[in-house]
Structure formats: C-alpha cells, structure tokens
Amino acid sequence: MRAIGIILLGWLLVLGSCKKDKYTTRVEGRVINVGTQLPIEGVKVVIANEVSFSPSHTDTTVTDANGNFSIELPNENGAWIHLRKIGWTFHSSSLNNVVGYQTSYPAGTTSGVKLEMYSKAWFGGVFLSTSPSINDSLYYMSLPYSTSVDYLGGE
Image 1: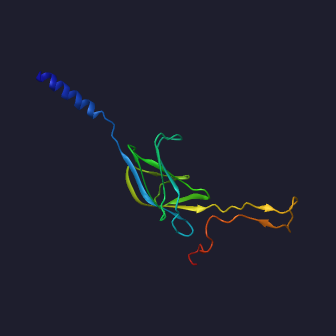
Image 2 (image 1 turned 180 degrees about the vertical axis):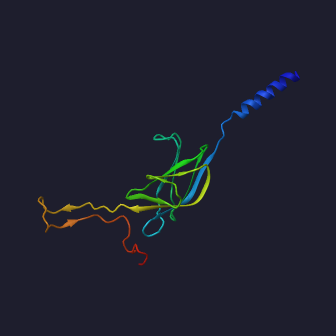
Image 3 (image 1 turned 120 degrees about the vertical axis):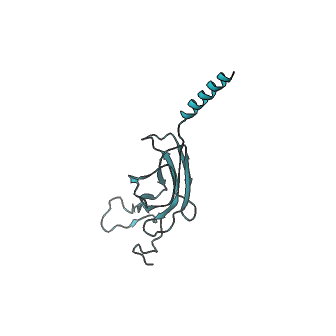
C-alpha cells in the first residue's frame, strides 16, 4: 500500500512540474494629446497577446477623464497595446517600445506609461458650385480639438 502511495506522489510531482508557467501582463498609464499635453478621455485601450496577426487573447478598457487607464492580460508572457479613438492617431510612448502603431510590454506590471496621440486634422469641404474655381467658398467641419492653446507652450 505504501508503494502505491509513493508511486502516486511521484506521478503528481512529475505532472505538476510539467505545468506551463503562467504570467500576467499589466499596463498602467495615461493617454495625452501630444500638442497640448492634456489628457484624452474616452480612448479605447486594447491589450492583446503576442501572437502575430491574430491574437487569441485580448481585453479592452477606456481612459477616464484624466486620461488614465489600467489594463491586464492574465496568463500571458508579454502583450501589445493599441489605442483607438475616432479622430485621433497614436503618436509615441514614453518607453522605447513602439512598433508601428502599437507598443509592446513584458510580463509583469509596467506603471507610469505615457502614451501620446495627435488629432487628425481633417476638413469635410463642400464647394458651393459644381465647377469650383479659386473664387469659390469652402465650408469645413470643426476640428475635433480646441485651437485655443498654442502648441509652442503658451496660451
């Protein structure tokens, strides 16, 4: 009977040692306007595992009124962050981890991240005549950000 117990204990140790190590990737930070350095509220922050082109694990959150976010991807040894907000484009990260339009993070907690976005300035122009000329008027839609702050630092 004692031999069977020792064999079962041995099997449990072998099977337990084959268990995959589990990690968690957590990112905490703030999303700001690259020009004004003001927080951007309502940015969708998407975290995805490091599987190329088709991540199998994702999670999302939204920045608060101060641009802050905290997001976690359990059981992953590293992850990527994407930012999404209509009228805005990702610019840069305070860390040296930018690849294209996304940022990479190792397992563990990364705090104090500053992600910058800039507004896409676009104009929905409408000409008044069917054959536009240099004398025509052009109406455009408002910019999605305030222009009252000088981007060189003053107001």
